[in-house]
Structure formats: C-alpha cells, structure tokens
Length: 201
Image (cartoon, rainbow, N blue to C red; front, side):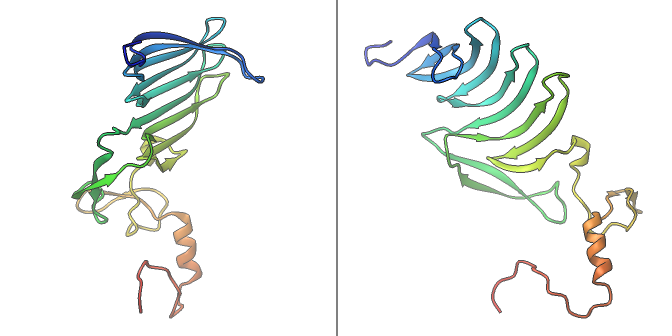
C-alpha cells in the first residue's frame, strides 16, 4: 500500500467461500488501486480457474476460463474504456462495397469495459468449440457462424444456392432462402408494403 492507502505492485487476494459459492484466490498487479495486466484465479486447492487481462482496472483483451479439470470452458474478448478519454474512432463502411471505408466517426463508449472481438464457447468434456460470437463495441455482430461464413451477402446474386462468379471475377453469394421465399410469395403483386427505412410522407 502506498501513503494514500492505494494498492500497488503484486498482490495475492483470497476470497473465502460465501453463501454456497466456492472461494478462490487471485493474483496479479495493482497500479493505483486498479488491476493491471494479467491476473490469474485459482481454486483454494490450487487449480487454475481463469486468466484475465486488465487495463485501467477493467477487463481488456483475452480472458480464458477453465473447468476444474483444466479444460477450456469459455474464451472472451474485452476492450477497456479509458476513463479519462471515453471516445473511440470507428470505420464506417459503404453499403455497396463492405470493404471500402467511406468515413471515420468518433463515438462515445458507454460503460467501463466492452465486449469486443470473438468469443468462443467450448464443450467442457471434449474441448471443442461449440459456439462463437463476434462483438463490436459491446454489440453482437455475428453469432454461431464459422469464420468463412462471415462474407457479406450480395442481394443481386443469382437464385442458386451455391456461390457464383461474374464476369469481373468477383465472388457473389446467393440470396438467403428467406429472401427467395418472400420474392416467390409476392411475385406479380403490384403493391407490396415494405419498410425501407424512409420517414415522412
């Protein structure tokens, strides 16, 4: 502890069992009374429970949680918000070309730590990935898809279910089945009520 009563340096903190919850022990570094860098949690018997990374006292980067038998249970990705400057610059992509950045925008980050990146959930017995989620600034972007399925969908693509290539060599992806069903159901109708995002009259 320093002269102001703030924790500094390496610490080992023991949390005893309480109200049916098992106790644990954690170790890591404090800077100005806030967790910084890598922290590890262990059971009171010494088995590793988790490895977490901190910045400004908040989770930042990758955190991994384990079962009592050492198998990975969950892998999380976090982004800590600097309390002195809670703003970030993000890229805004074009609708016609999702790889082209059309502008940058400054946003205020709410909260102290945000889910940001890919989260993985493991089968506790086999250790295989059963589910993935991708977050951007605490908003769920993709849930349960493999990485090769994250390509943007081209709504001008053909009606076939497989991907095709046009004359320019660009790879296009077929329309989703829900879109095909909707087009088939409303084919030949003159006026269809569709929400297109416009406001006013």
